[in-house]
Length: 93
Image (cartoon, rainbow, N blue to C red; front, side, top):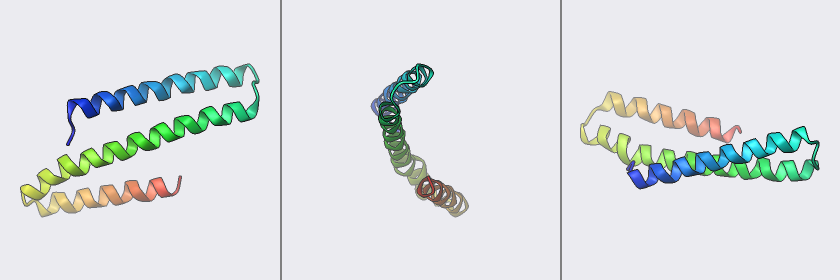
């Protein structure tokens, strides 16, 4: 379920990722040590992957549950395809 608390945590994580990206840009502009840049980059990737999982969890527990409760087969099928597309895309990254 998309609660205000979950949304707040996700926004904080997005802002932290943005802040880290800004730091990475500055590091790259200053030609800092590649491994340091890579470590910061991996931190951003980890944050974004975590947020994706939280968003997917919220979607399945809110939007998808609503479609099931409404007994809307067409909407459920569409949402299943959306989720599968997301999962396939994530696996290729």
